[in-house]
Image 1 (cartoon, one colour):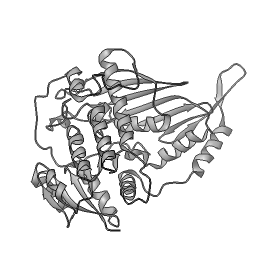
Image 2 (cartoon, one colour; image 1 turned 90 degrees about the vertical axis):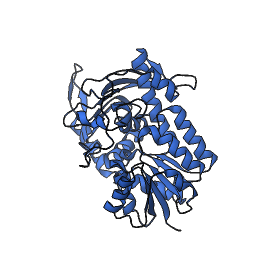
Image 3 (cartoon, helix red, strand yellow; image 1 turned 180 degrees about the vertical axis):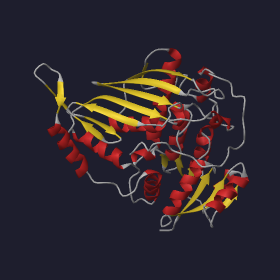
Amino acid sequence: MNKIGIAILGSGAIAKVHADCFRKLEELCEIRAVCDIFPDKAEALIKEKELDHAVALADYSALWDMDSIDAVSVCLPPGEHAKAAVAALEHGKHVIVEKPMACSLEECDQMIKAAERNNRILSSVAQNRYKIPMMKIKKLIDSGELGRVLQANINSWWWRGQNYYDLWWRGTWEKECGGCTTSHATHHIDLMLWMLGKPRAVTAVMGNTGHFNSECEDLSYAIFEYPGAMALLNASLVSHGEEQELVFQCERAGISIPWKVRASKALGNGFPEENKDEENRIQQLYDSLPEIPEEGHAAQLRNFLKAIRGEEDLFISGRDGRNTIEIIMGIYKSSIEHRPVIFPIKEDDPFYRKDTMVGSMPHFHEKLKSVDNLADVGISLGRDVGK
């Protein structure tokens, strides 16, 4: 089969990650175009990554008549995701879109329907599922060896400086569609949904305590209700050290990412003592589970390409991305209305559509500074949530 022709929309930090990964998958694909409203940035990415077969384009609509382009990788600001993805799908291109999938449930549904209508593949990036500890813990939970999950604590802790929000599209409900919950905790929300399924309800609060050039939240706390369980999500952009973790307290033991297992058993008075035998049993189970050969973006992009070729089932779909957006909208709705929100969010709800969601949101601060580009010094990803 011929190589899959790839176009990357956007040339910022995450586009460079996609370029590196597609380069590693050259037996399956070839990058043939990079699009950016700043053409010099597209040219610079092509030169930096030695994309010898790629052209730089200022307008991605030029791709639609290019038979050499089979799939589009959407690495644009969040507010542009749905428009670009729907256009690509309607012109017969497969699409993988960076997080967050879109800015509203309505936009997610438009993307999903366009994929179905045109028989194209739509995938939403959730690369942290493709981490060895994630895969192993998912299998442990599903196996029943831990008993039921009773409680989950999920810390989506990040740190960003004030100047992070100087970039023109960041820090506005209209263009970024949210703060730490939408742009950062989306990873952890996807993992929660993958591990535990969809919650019945959420109660949440949010605020902005440390970023004064952003309309959006830099802190949010959400409590999720499950049948027989509860989960707590802490999302932050003011957490030095970015010590992210997921902790699952189950009937037989507690396990966490970064990996750790602790087990207790009851004394005669009900107080705990350490259950080393159970800890050793679970550790042996964890160690016996096979490791995946490839992690992160590269693994997800490989699956996306192989799904296009009909060689694998798509692991992370557009519907998975929609599920994450629904949880985010529930967090925002609960925070604004100061009450629990029951899922699902229906089409007549103001938090289903972007315009009514944006109109409902507070401006914690007004965005007063805006620049076209920030200093090109690379990005740091904090402590790897999968390690």
